[in-house]
Image (cartoon, rainbow, N blue to C red):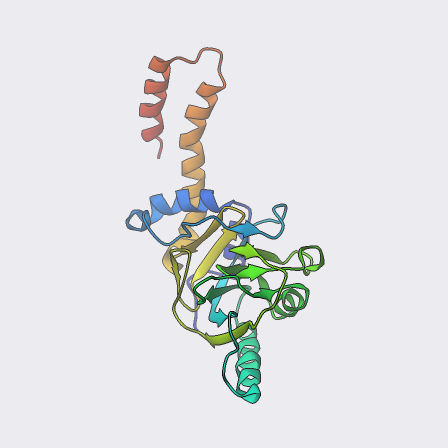
Length: 235
């Protein structure tokens, strides 16, 4: 198993913050990443009350619009191999599945059974451009950030796994750190993980100067200009 420049506790600490806050912190830690590395299309959260998820990516692709065309034994081997792949992780995982169909979400891979299976395999949740169903019967605390909600399996099947994928503009590789909530998802570079909390604190202190002024009865445009300048000076 590869070593990581962070611990499971570091990833768990980032779950206290929503994904927009994580993106703000990344602008400070890795400014060259400001324009990419996150989802850029609307997504649907299975449960908006759940805390964010943050874990190592387990990547795969699927289709559902037509049968796989493979022998049943080969389908079974790929499915069980996928389960073994998801389970083989040193830390909690976030499953990331790209639906390759021309109309992603034609059939739902995610529902009551697969949410329970993947939670048992150590996953906190899933990010996919595909669909999910069984909203009232999903495994407790298992978050799904998906493209659409759909009632049917159709012909859903895994195509491959442990590969580079793209979900709504976010490129994901095996073992990337993925943070996600109802706003969408973002990849956190490994070397940035331990720097994130300090960057979150800095961002909050800079924003507080402006937010406090906005809530003040003494607000004015001139004071806003001064607050903007003061905010930039906080380090």
